[in-house]
Image 1 (cartoon, rainbow, N blue to C red):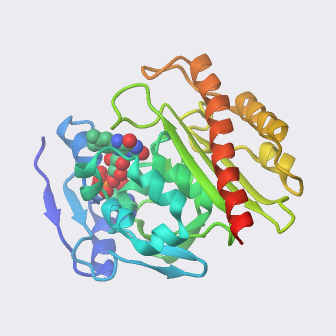
Image 2: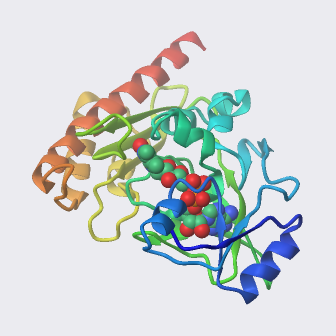
Length: 294
Ligand SMILES: Cc1cc2nc3c(=O)[nH]c(=O)nc-3n(C[C@H](O)[C@H](O)[C@H](O)COP(=O)(O)OP(=O)(O)OC[C@H]3O[C@@H](n4cnc5c(N)ncnc54)[C@H](O)[C@@H]3O)c2cc1C
């Protein structure tokens, strides 16, 4: 690994000053960045840790949702009662990431900015909705999560900008969710196929809110794929077994995976249909139970 200087600024302004002037990059937990440095796929003069800047390792209420600071560790999310109550989908997805060592090191900022198209985290965020808070030399910007991911390993961040945190919307009150991940290798792998489903029912048991998002299967844009046509199909209606089959068939048609070492494209498409059905059934069963118990 080439030598670099590790800088630990104590304020955002100081960090932005370094990022504006020098050959520098922010480091979070380093679980992705250090691999690039070690394999000489990237060389940097300065690596900037935000760990000494106050207020960036924080989990707090934000509207009906939750705000996560950039230096919050994935393990903090897993252990948070607030996240468990308001964002159970995110908690489940985070629990699927790598292993405990990875989750103890990896941070919200790094996990967002790595922008891997097979990321469990970004898939859950797109299903829930949210806004990324960004600081740069020209002040603060707030970027909707769906606009943050531009493509494989590419975000909407401009040179000299850094992420300070993310506001995540809670699913509507009473909504239920499911997150299912299918791996073809070790359990610590990124998903071959993953599905996030959110379903909100009204008092009459009709669908008032639906989200269906796929991960690992969008070969063209390489970012989480929201299946809006499937969501629109059920909104306002009862979610019957036929509706679930139709939604899963739409997801099957829209998924455009690439063949890779995990699986051939045709297999991933079959798994999309299967896991969409299972995720929707699981979310619906939870929603119907909550409706029955009031
Ligand atoms: C063994 C292993 C198993 C894994 N399994 C999974 C899995 O099952 N599912 C899954 O989704 N992922 C998995 N991952 C990926 C893992 O989730 C990411 O490596 C991790 O979340 C990245 O977070 P980090 O804080 O370590 O980022 P870093 O490595 O520190 O940084 C990643 C990128 O983000 C940039 N960055 C960091 N913080 C900021 C900031 N505040 N502002 C702007 N840019 C920033 C860095 O410059 C770098 O480009 C696995 C990784 C490993 C090593």
